[in-house]
Length: 63
Image (cartoon, rainbow, N blue to C red; front, side, top):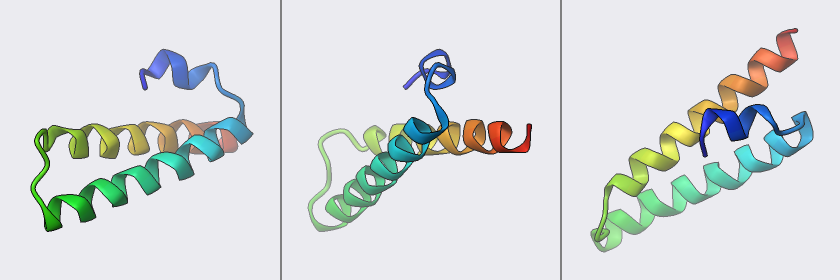
């Protein structure tokens, strides 16, 4: 997800997407340990998306 898309989400949607991407990231990591992924950059992309969502959520909660 891009930052522009993230900024358009509500707080509840941010929480939902954050949980979804955390689960996806964990599944990618676990799957990569068992059998290497064809594109391991998916793990990095998921991790960075989780960070973007968490940052935006924290910024909104602090305002």
